[in-house]
Image (cartoon, rainbow over all chains, first blue to last red; front, top):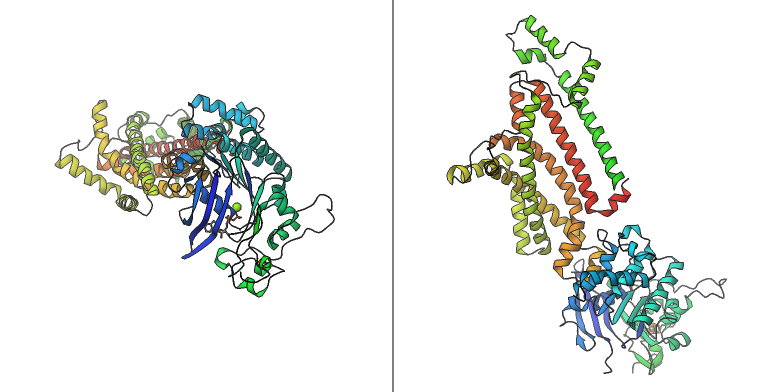
Length: 323
Length: 313
Ligand SMILES: Nc1ncnc2c1ncn2[C@@H]1O[C@H](COP(=O)(O)OP(=O)(O)O)[C@@H](O)[C@H]1O
Ligand code: SF4
Ligand SMILES: [Mg+2]
């Protein structure tokens, strides 16, 4: 059985927004191997969260998956009962630790919830397992903390609780959507460390979403770079860092702060990610790209394979000629 | 939690004191001589003077105030001008009728209103939502006394299912007498609660932690009843508090419609008879009810929302 664990094929997600139909995610494909680790990178507004929410079908009422298939271990999630997949087979950690826990329920009960919802074990054992998970994610005195309410905890603590709750059923896949973005730098490292350790202990595959390439390097094997709703590059981590195939990736790499030359002014890609209402035709990165040529603003660049483990959607790899 | 409740209780006591003071001065700056009011225009000046002395109306105002507070503190409400009965006993007899009515109406309101609000919110934009909203609008538009009279005519006079008037004697009979007035006030309360629950639940269902619950595999039923409703009820409890207060005044008209011997009836007959110690005592007890309701709501908040126990010190 060499099925990928997760296969996203041609995903397009549309929102009704102010009478218009917008597509913040368009024709996105990637896959995650059993036990593997994939990073999804891109600036804020690239469509990473919408992609993640599409996988678990947690989109708001205004959104709809227009086209594409999402296969989990070979099963199309469109036909699977999502409530039995969520929390048991796929766990998810969100970007907003401060608001993602229910303020009126005890933390321990929230961590244990997936176990009881999926009838994995009786409530008493679920409690014990929840406390064990809280200990594993680094809460001291977990028996007592399990009785706390979310407002009694810091953001970092809450994110640990979220991770414990997402992993308590030992899902085969964890989707972590910018799990450290809302946290202090020192806490960020701790959370990443916990994720890494949990992955090693439980063998969970992971999709790690981030806008920070620095986070990706030591965590995942392969990377998907998203820009304005599209995948612009996919590569193994080594190739991506050594030899980025897309000008956007190059820009992201230059923007990563380096420990050794703090003197250098941090590079910023000029301009901003356009909102879905104003996606330009052709290559969506063209307005910000230093290498852009006329063809770039007219035609969408195809994905060109650069090696068996790397491809990029950029006209420069065809010599700016249509194939 | 204990400190929170202590603070609320101190607030409540302060409020009671303010209310007592207000009632005291209001009763005394009111135009008209209470002695004349009590004994009528035909009374001789000797009679009036004797009455004033008896009631302490000739004492300086501060002394009267102290006496008044002291009496209230001992729950000594004096005697009725008109009948000479002890007012304390009068009110003690009437209060249960009012409290039972308010409590029963609240139960009816919550039992109908909360599920109706949940059904409306979870079926937003569908026919169940429209029907629930239409009915609740109707419930809010009908004046209570009109609805009461309507129910009285249909269920008591025509169908003869319930007694027409009075408070009843013995548990079952009292319960039987309670049904129609409680349903009357309860329907209005339900309409109010349903609308509040609906809007509050819709707002809560958009929160991040609801998405988290879904991500854990919670089916819609669990999402709504376990995760959303308790959060959604926080503003509903506020609404309850406000509504019970209006209902206490509403109970006056309902008690009149159903001729229940409750606080409202005592107060109104006291006003009609110009029996001013009765009115004064009735006002004080009404105000006490209001304060107790508020205090209960504060405690309820703390039970529903763990954040309040710590933060709202
Ligand atoms: N609920 C929503 N309604 C309308 N548009 C949305 C909604 N959520 C996201 N979007 C659109 O999708 C785009 C991408 O959002 P998102 O996936 O959150 O980006 P990222 O996670 O990469 O920062 C946003 O620019 C926004 O315009
Ligand atoms: S296709 Fe053109 S505009 Fe787009 S990234 Fe490549 S060079 Fe830049
Ligand atoms: Mg995001």
